[in-house]
Structures are given as C-alpha cells and as structure tokens.
Length: 107
Image (cartoon, rainbow, N blue to C red; front, side, top):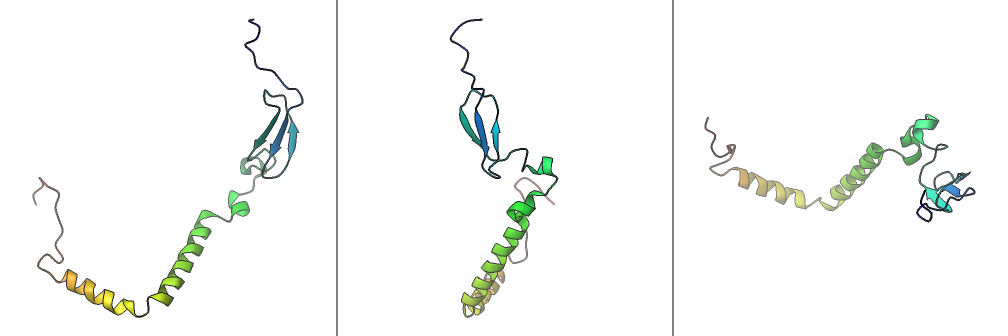
C-alpha cells in the first residue's frame, strides 16, 4: 500500500443523534459527527409511525386550511357579493360554457 493516501482512523469517534441525543462510539474517519436519525429512534427499527413524532402532514395541512378559511370568512363578509356579481358577468359572454380545443384537433 502507498503511504500517506489513507485517511486517519479514529477508534474513539463520537456519533451523536440529534433527535434522541444517543451517543455512539464508532470507529470513523471523522472525530465528532452528528446524525439526524439513528437506529434508536428511526421508525423502521422502532416500529412507530413517523406521524406520532411530527404530527403528520395531512393533519398539519388541515389545520392550516381551517385557519385560512376562518380568517377569510371573517375578512370577506362584504366582498363576497361584489365578487360573485363580477364572476356572473364574466361567464355570461358569447363564449360562456364553451370549451377550448387543442390546436390541430377537430371534433
């Protein structure tokens, strides 16, 4: 083997999990490193669903949508009548109800 081309190996390297704060002493080329998820808290190894820890994407989406609906219903009390009138006027033109075809295609 050539000398000087191999990285230095640390036998007492410390790996820390950011999620569960577990510390592992694993031989590595880096003296101190951090990982986001380890075998102690990863859902594949623990059998727990990830939604238990984070709350779930769907639940967060529904909460955001509910907050947006309640905010828009409070602030849009008087603007609803004007917006519905303008949408009716726009849809009553000569092309109302017609769909557009892609160019080059005939019925």
